[in-house]
Image (cartoon, rainbow over all chains, first blue to last red):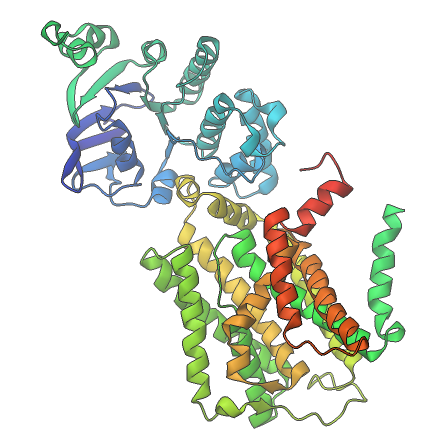
Length: 241
Length: 321
């Protein structure tokens, strides 16, 4: 049984069809890439899975149980954690306190939550920045804070929304190896929206291409990127040029 | 020098009734009372980011319930305070449930708090039990010996009561801020959707903040009743009173532990000091205090948007956020 099942999910915004009947699967400990041009409905789909927007029809199941209709905090506690494309750090809190808030989702003791949070910050290379206000982090650092905070809730499925955008290639490679590590060592499944193809190709075992709110195609990364449909969506047909 | 400062301040605070005349003592009580109410308001707005512009509601409820039980049935404040707390909890949680259930937040939530205080004021104007607009007056039979059971006695009794309340609220706030609740409240204050995505049932924790804040404020109301001894709906439930409550933490530093005390000190000294100074000069200037409060608020918002205390602290201890 797949860990996450998205079944014919539809989401309209005032008559505008943002997501039009999308279905996809993420298996246990699998990494799936979600790509598509801007406006394809990727982030809306994430919001729908995470419970941040109510869907109009369809169903999201996690471990076989329906989670669509639950509140975001209930979905987090069920084991799905997400990052925000537009980063939302708790600006007035320290970097460490940001992560502690996440860790408290599973941890009763503050001392233990603090210890885990420091370890996570260390793992994501934010150790030296732990005690400064989150507002003074640089953009790449904020992205890593989003990831640290999401991981602190000890998810079994991580939803990553463009966490590699704006990073330098070396920083991207670092992030990629971090994700591979947590995926292999802890068996955390990942569904990631990403424009940085270098990262998607390195991480995903399957790619789903979204276009105009619908699944255009899906399959193994090497095949998907060679598919004429995908090339057409991204580059246009020859007659367009 | 630094390690001596705190015990010295504690000693002065404890011995103040012996050192100060009754005028100074009344000012000290005013500072402590304002600081206490500010601390209570701060739990809701400063910690959890839920703006209340109607906190006079809980002062009034506490004052009228405990005051009324004493006035009508001779029940002392030690019983009345629990009834005051219970009423504040019921009203605040009902208000919060209503608001959050329908997604009312921010400015609209603040408007709802004003409205609730206003219609309570109108309601109390029409109740016989409260004496209506004519007010309720608690008997002051003795000003000499301490009657702890009924909270009657000399000014020093009220000074120590206010001091206890103030220290108690500060200690409680500090503990709350460093608990799970404190982390969750601050997360909700900074970014509610992000907080929710991290597994926080934001509605439940916002309700907790409102309930604690309201209960503490109602306890302040009980003190209000037994210290001032006269209650009028027009005063105690007024929007002006609500603003007075939040002025101290706003000026002193929203969300900080020392902010309400610093703000109360600055506001009271400024207000009383200027009134006193002018009357020495033979001038009467009614309303001057309010004008000065307004100017101070303006200056604070303009120059120290985080409040006096955070700025002062970073000057005193450079290097710390």
